[in-house]
Length: 183
Ligand SMILES: [Fe+2]
Ligand SMILES: [Fe+2]
Image (cartoon, rainbow, N blue to C red):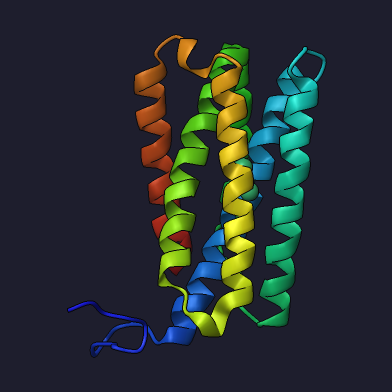
């Protein structure tokens, strides 16, 4: 037996609450993503990866603007933790960039892999009644995968301590996702 959004159990969020949580966490995530690239550009803004970082940052800005618009139109409460993601996103970007271009790319790969899983789970859960939102998330997911591939093509896996850094960043992303859905 598989559960759909309409087969809710007592205490489960309603379908509307579930979609609101999705918009809240996606808005938070895109906000954090933009801050990561800003942090990386603060360190590597004059390096030869700067154009790639700016390209990815520009796409994150479009993602963020789209979810900001959804937050406003659907009257979804944004996460209370935006000030935290403001600082943590920038710090993660700047710290990895300070370790070098390959570490910055390793950060991108880890973050985008976590977001890919997250967006894939959302599009699988959304029904036909939310087709436009599903399309939006699917489009963004493809762009996040493009970012992951940019990271892989630019030496992410050659970063010192790649596996450990990747595991730590992915775990952090998953925790941030769980918190931002609720708080
Ligand atoms: Fe994004
Ligand atoms: Fe991204």
